[in-house]
Length: 156
Image (cartoon, rainbow, N blue to C red):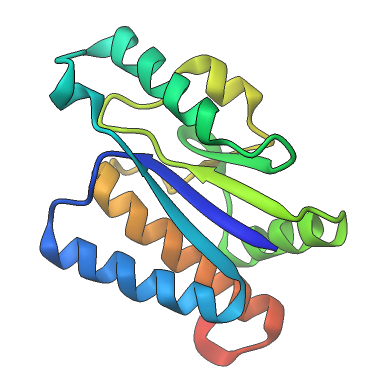
């Protein structure tokens, strides 16, 4: 299975960029993994609010694989334990999913049309995280889920 994580904008913080690289490499040792960084439209076009979310959704839609399962990070989504998240990934693999596209929105969030299209709306909890921190948290949870599924002792 191939895991792709898609987000708008580059990771600017050097420590966060380092953690993203570390966990991306860890995930890649267990399953195919890639990151797609889309242009930051808030900087280039000065968009805000619904216009920014809609423009980002257009870029995200273009980058999605038509046959991939779609999981979006959404504050109103399901809160799963690490074991429940691993079980979801395992079920997707058993159903024959060849790719899962995870989407993290920018600072303004995700367009509602993209959220409605998702196979999984995933929340990282009720606390608010920066979109850059969400990148690390999602990658770490994907790595943890792979360890759980492969019975590697990391997850304890």
